[in-house]
Length: 331
Image (cartoon, rainbow, N blue to C red; front, side, top):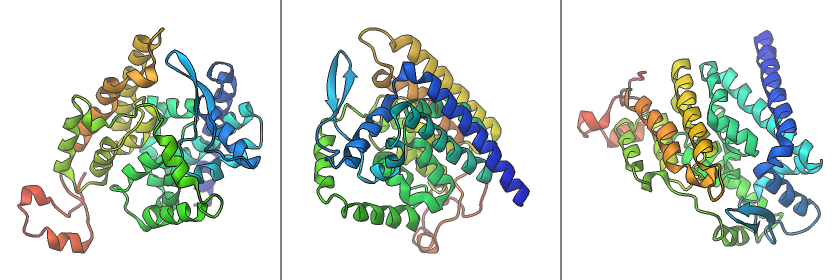
């Protein structure tokens, strides 16, 4: 067992090193992407300034705007170590650390999902310096569930799949604890959210209503994850959708989802990476077609089976069988 643990850590570290090295060499082109904003606001906090006041200059469509901090205060705790070093190094270290964590969780819990790392969602998430690798890791290792609050929309979507005490109560406790550092942050955060660029709800875009078909498999945690994800606002540019790779249960499914997502991403880059276009804000239908709908097909191919708490089983005992499903675990 110890040898296997060492092997898993070594492989995870190697994958993380590759991701960090790639981020380092891509920096002249990415300029730190989304991570640059996190780094900027975390440095403000470490310097004693209010991270929710003022903004990081960023290009939006055809003009530069000061973008405020859109994340809950606990995100600054996790960012702080990476803000102690220059931006380029912090960006590379963050990419490496998040990749090591996710790779380790995948290899430890479900190595058949390793092709997740070849999909557009993982590549874009690491390239942008985003939080979704961490949120996905919390679903693979529920003991980390309380950390999902750092990206609240995707963290909220993860609750139906894993309504554990660590995720719900632990996350709430972390939010309360953060009030000791800056009691005013919830009001300031909500104020800043009013200026956030459009984050559509997948369920409400044309074709998105099809995701409601996952209700037919409501007993399955992956079906509930798909539904949760479809119901929260998110940037429909692949990175936010990374937890949906947990719908894939086999290596073949994981490869298939990574392949369809890569095709959609490459089309988005070709179609929208031009003057007046922006792949990050114009890829809604491609994300739906390349990620959500293939994940939905995978869910619908399975039976509506899965274990639920006994108090729920008692309440649904009189439901029709086709709605109630079966408690028996089934692939």
